Amino acid sequence: MRYGFIGLGNLGRCLAANLLKAGFNVAVHDLDKTAAEDLLAAGAEWAESPRDAAEGSDAVFTCLPSPKATVAVLTGPEGAFEGLAPGATWIEMSTNDPNEIKRLAEAAAAKGLKTLEAPVTGGVHRAATGEITILVGGEEEVFRTHEAALQAMGGEVLHMGGLGQASVIKVITNMLAFIHLVAAGEALMLAKRGGLDLTKAFEAIRASSGNSFVHETESQVILNGSYNIGFTMDLACKDLGFALGFGDEFGVPLALAGEVERIFTRARESYGGEAWSPLVVKLLEDALDTDLRAPGFPERLEG
Image 1 (cartoon, rainbow, N blue to C red):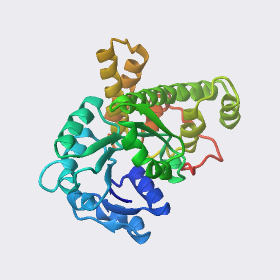
Image 2 (cartoon, one colour):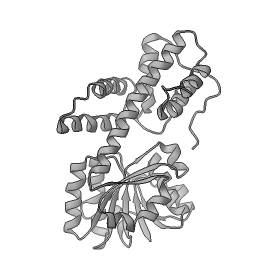
Image 3 (cartoon, rainbow, N blue to C red):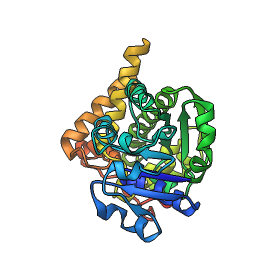
């Protein structure tokens, strides 16, 4: 099968590369052609526009930083919807609002197109090794049609139900991750100010009932000082906004998530929207004039 892939950021490049490794024909597009250099060297075809990426493809993937960006690449005379033939599929891998996905799915259906949502969770380092988890929403038959491609990009591929369901659980998992990140920073600071060796503290937490996936991964780049997890402050604030919106919509008070959203907003104001999201912990480091550093931790995670 042939796939178009639009959006070659930190995550999208890895996902598209995994499609190529699995033997799929892939046409790629991004606003920055240099982002595609490695993919083109590996056999991908360059598409000059979203429409070009979609033409002749069984499906087109979008992996973009915002709902606004998704709308921009799908619609209009050079949009992907104009390139896809009736019966083809749009697969949204961005974290998006389920109501917006449903609205765009209706526009797609009017052109005879099908829709899947397939947001991912687990971090860029797991996308690079094909181990990232993919959460899928949409009709079972459409999911089965593209299951092989999704399996090529990820480890666990979970069909969550109808369109919109995957977006809700993806936002929930990200909300938990951001809560865990702030908590991990506070825990490490307690250890540091309590006179503990931070390497030993990291290992003790990792081996304890207080462990989390975020501690095992993001605490390492905090202790290194790079904070580089490949995920920006803007994206974190966007996803926390979605979570709080769900809280209002579903009638669930999200006191903890609300406080974490306020902390991330302060961090974005301090360090900028393009700063890596673990820099949220630096707010505490700066406030106490105490850094959280330990030798032997990697600058970037490697799968």
